[in-house]
Length: 430
Ligand code: HAM
Image (cartoon, rainbow, N blue to C red):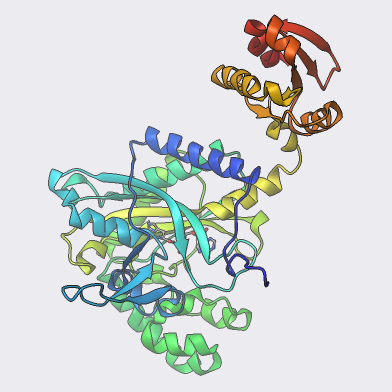
């Protein structure tokens, strides 16, 4: 029979790698808690319109990459509905903010999420069809200060802190302002005019974007197009006074706390909801898919999906890429930490149940324990013990009766008989 494999662009995460995933997630939760964020969990699929109205019809994500299906009604009272596996989580968070009237308290909502996202992209290193994001959003009514540049700077400073605590140092923060909803049409018009002459010489995608959504031309990655795109008008020249002052204040706050950045006037990001601040943290070790994380401000998103005015800013970290970065940085020495503290080897079938009791005692004392099997010969128990743990405990009839347990530590070869009550302490010392 033919073998069934994981679907293209999806993968299984296995131990010991999952230990690194757990470490990253735990670190993120710890840092987010210090900045007073709380966790939100939204559904993995949503009404398709949520994404077309927020991320934007003309973006690559919505036009090419979504997993969308028509949900058949199960009862006459139900209507057929177009559903989509979430390609990102910001739209879902803002939908939940609106649905649960989270703005009514008049405070900022500071929400973080950790979970899978789905995009039908061409898989390669660091790019998958099911990937994981660790993200956060700060959103609220303007009266709560949600438009303040201090929010942008605080979020960026939090990211620098999180990457620092994970031991990632050599990142670059690319920063830009794409202006307000009022600035954008003027810029888009200027782009559109500049593109009239050159669009036919650009790639097929850009020829289409030049007409439907000129801003997206700036996302183009085709090498031959780059020089021409570089010469196009820059958004910075179209910002109004308020947007200019906002961007200056973000930069001043970053300067004050020593978070370095590089202003990149082309950073418009591949989603339509952004206003003013946009950013990405890149890392050289990642190769072509070098964006560790991306984010920005989205002051009109809530209104675009039927909600009240609720400016916000947030980011999403590509957890798969974070793992890749940490793996490259620390290859080696993970096998040692994967070892259990002890391998408990029952010396006969009659000792199996009692060996389970002993393993339970040791686990309750906080030790990491592997339990062997009473049908194994001594030689096999030692082989397994040596592969799986730092020490082995032999548990036979004598041990069960006398309460004196035989222990051997593999690193030193040291052997001893230890009273059962002291065993955990002795093993902890090895
Ligand atoms: P995004 O730039 O589309 O933004 O994705 C954020 C990060 O997710 C990327 O920088 C990358 O690390 C990771 N990522 C994206 N696609 C893939 C993929 N196919 N495979 C592996 N990793 C991937 C957003 O999703 C916005 N919702 C971020 C945001 C939050 N903006 C405001 N708030």
